[in-house]
Image 1 (tube, rainbow, N blue to C red):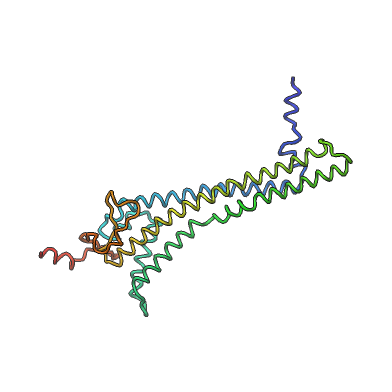
Image 2 (cartoon, rainbow, N blue to C red):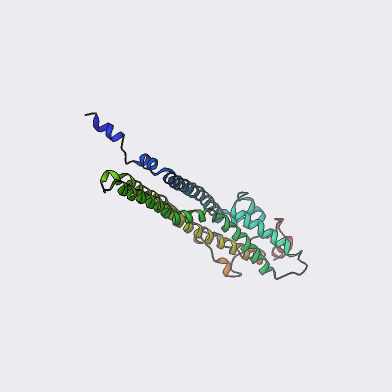
Length: 272
């Protein structure tokens, strides 16, 4: 009755015996696959947190950013390290720098290029680490296959040495080969799934950032006269900036960095 547990505990065809029989090559392949797997899950969780933070920032922008009277106060509502805050700050800096150019270009083109550069920098940060996932997904099966080839090779050597293809002679090396194949697939499949999932989420985030950048560009180029709708029916991405002159201009909606309300616009309205 006690022999069965003992035999199960001393299984000669498990992972540890397979690595011991495989020697340095099997242990090296196993170590590389473990490092790949740990790196995959580390990148997956860190990128998910980064993406979720930007998604939360986007909700804050849609709920309160465009209700502010000027960009200075609107930017103050955003987190200091927010991706949306970085775009707004870069836009204000580009607006100030345009007047200092010795050979000025059209303000529309200058602002568009500056916003595109800022948006591209955010996209580059979102894409960090995804190349590792793609590499793991494409190479892990072949690394496991290398361990499989070595295991089959050792099985053939045992058959040649013993002169017969008995199950005792080839079970160990063949089991080692199958384990390496399985490990390669176990590491590769999560990496591919994580890569595709993160790419899809990055695409959605960049679409939201592009919409915000377009709204901000229209707001700056119209001196605050064109701004997206923020009502319940405006949706996730507003298109009010495409209908020039239809959006109401609120008092004090000055896109300047100073955040001051220009009295030149308020005086004629009072006179009427």
